Amino acid sequence: MKARPLLLRALLAFVLATLCFMLLAASAADATPVDAKLPQMVKDALRPETPYIPARAGWDGPMAKNSAVAQMNVTQMLAEANHMRAMREAIREAAIPDPRIAGGLLALIFLLRELRQRQRRATVIEMPLRHGPEELKAA
Image 1 (cartoon, rainbow, N blue to C red):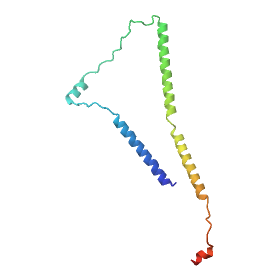
Image 2: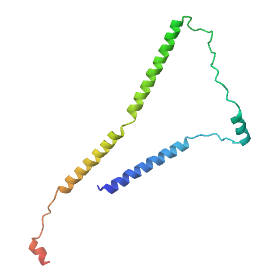
Image 3: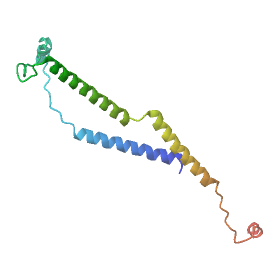
């Protein structure tokens, strides 16, 4: 197979995959229309930002009375959060391939295909003649 049809086929596959992705992404997009009224937007921008107020849920509720136990629970929660963060990072690193490896694999694929094509071109098949070379010259 020649390189040009192969590249055209790869380009066509890429374009079709991109088109399908765009169509699927557009069909799943739901948006609520926003009425942008300038006076309301100016009023919202000038209003001071509400300060963050921590929640008081369970402030005097069934919490551990011993501060050492409470500290251990907080430490345990933070350790679990760090562990989950590390797991997500490891999965992210495993899911995203290294571009150098991907490029090397692509180069290896193309080089092996070229090697196979050269071997096929190097094979010469001689066809037997029905007539001798002298008869062909006379005709």
